[in-house]
Amino acid sequence: MSSEPRDPSGYYAALGLTPDASLDEVKAAYRARVKAVHPDSAGTASREAFHRLSEAYAVLRDVVRRAEYDATGTPGSDDDAAAPVSPFACCRCGQVSAQPRYIVFYRVKSYLLWARLERVEGIFCRECADRAAAESSTATWAWGWWSLPGLLLTPLALLRNLLGGARPRHVNARILIRQARAFLNRGELGLAYAVADQAKAYARESSHRRQVADLQRATASTARRLKDRWRPWRGGAFLPQLLPLAALPLTVGLFLVVLIKPWNGQNGASANIEVAPPSIGEIRHVAVDALKVRQAPIEGAPVLTLLDRFTAVTTLAVGDNGTWVEVRTPSGIVGYVPTRSLYGGSGRLLRQEWCGEHLGTVPAAGEVLIRRASGAHQLMLQNDGRTDAVVKMKTLSGTTVMAYYVPATYHIVVDGLPEGSYHIEFATGSRYSRACGLFVDDMTTDELPFTLNLHYVPALTVATLAGDLPIIVLAPPPGALRAPRPIPESQFLADD
Image (cartoon, one colour):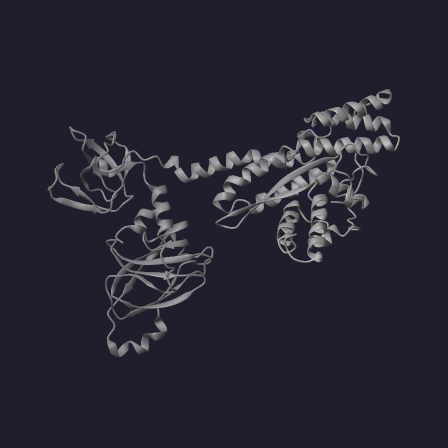
């Protein structure tokens, strides 16, 4: 525990330890070795070894005697009234302090399923105590949270370190009394009185209180007091430890808010929960898969169309009993659906979240996502942009015939195209969701301002037209006449 550890009596060597061993390591080494040299074992050598181990353990397990041994090489006395050879020094910097304290700081390390609570202890000056507290808290912040026991131990360890660590009264009373005696023997009466005055705060045993009173009587003529430097907030490490610890409840609160997502507040629930009827003109979204829009507000009425989950509809009227509502779909169809099948809002955020959770595998370059017809034509798709794209060929009536996946910077030749006239629509973005047929992040939708006409070509002339392969450029240079024009996302996703 000294800045220049020594082992003149061989106590550490007897236990197989180094002078920087912790108290727990001292206890473990003693228990492991004493079994082999118990006095019941035969032979004088065993009895002598047992005596040697017991002597070393008696000194090294006692914080005060060990501190004297490390500093002076003298084992020290277990009698607190005895005068030490010299004052105690800080275990880190080796400087003698008028206000030494024995402090235990805590450090937590997690190992997924379990956690270990370690002790960083010693006799410190104030500056070194601040550094030890900061180091222990930093290590705990980094390694303490990664197990269930760690989640419980880490906040407690951080709070204990913030408040100055644990300071056992009995040990600190002994240290301060012996420190005062050391200053008295050196003739520094004022310091002896001041240190004895600080010892009163820790003295609980009658013998310690009596020794403090004797020291103060002996030095009363030079009485002086030292400013207490050990208030937690007076240290340089208090604020750096306080700020992240104070932010912890806020961080947990924000995490819970993100987890609960109150901004997605839904008005509906399962079929056995009543949902408040919407007002006329309110926007709601479909909360079930394949919702049937019926011609009349009764079960069994003819089905006009099916709506996907998260489709936004406009409410037109509410039935007399509130269980049915008349809606208008994005395509303009008017019909009736059960009130409980609609949730409040457009559902855009919920759809975005659901699509992000159902990405599926990343499509391959040139993969056909949709094919509803085939033929003998080919064309080249050029995506010179920085984001991936999905290209759709739609008939003039808006029916999707083919859809391809074209990664960024790819030029892909596609075949099997049927003859006809087509509009070219495409979407760009990142994180394509197979379940939703859209990009989850940064999606934009555009249409090329021309019609692609694919005519019948006799089989005998196909080879001669190889050089006339149509080229569809998704990212034309600035100022090009055929620059794409934005379209609504709903138009791109229609008829998938």
